[in-house]
Amino acid sequence: MQKEKHWSRFANDFEKRVIYVAGKQNILAIEKTLGEQRLKGKVLELGCGNGTYSEALARYAQVLHITDLSHQMVSFCQSRHKNLKNVVVERQDCFNLSYAAGKFNAVVMVNLLHIIPNPEAALIEARRVLQPEGTIVVVSFTSSGMSFFSKLGMMYRYFRAYGKPPAGSRVLDVDSISQMLKCTGFSVVSANLMGTGAKAVFARAIVS
Ligand SMILES: C[S@@+](CC[C@H](N)C(=O)[O-])C[C@H]1O[C@@H](n2cnc3c(N)ncnc32)[C@H](O)[C@@H]1O
Image 1 (spheres, protein in one colour):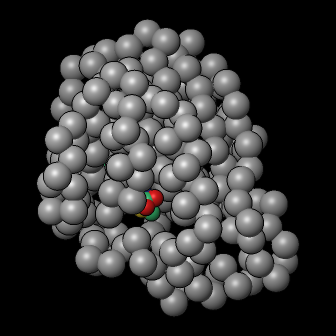
Image 2 (image 1 turned 90 degrees about the horizontal axis):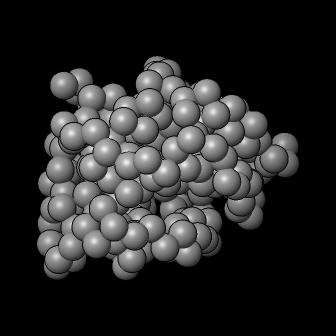
């Protein structure tokens, strides 16, 4: 399994840094929209970070597996979500999941696709663990659709919070995420930009 060094450094206060960079209202809006997806059954969250969205996802899931490559993120979430009875916290590499094919009803990736080197490979692996007609929800921050001054402010706050982005990071937009989903065996149900100031792509698709 790979090592995760870049994001692990921020495990103790990652959520605070995200709020500083993207704004609390945008994080709350993503949380609300994720909850509104009403993902039921066995749900898998990949690259969960500090587990910011776990409570919203746990509301409808029968069992929610929240996973991350970083040991530090995993232990943060184990402590943070110890009272959520339907949540299992595990270390998993999104490129090489330890689960059997077809185990999950839904897979969620928030701010993962744009920071990993081969997003298509992660989508193919997500599809493998989904049931036929399973659902995938992808959310990714993007500079697409942001005004010039919002982009400048975001870049400044990003570098202050995290330093240089990790190798393999890229800007994704509605079209590139939709295209990636189609090329990896999904039918896109919806794909939109959301957010005030900062923007995120919010896409929902099903196994085709
Ligand atoms: C930008 S953070 C997003 C965290 C969280 N989803 C959020 O939006 O607050 C990306 C997360 O992906 C994790 N990650 C990086 N590479 C990964 C991989 N190959 N498999 C699983 N998680 C990975 C990092 O450790 C980090 O916690």
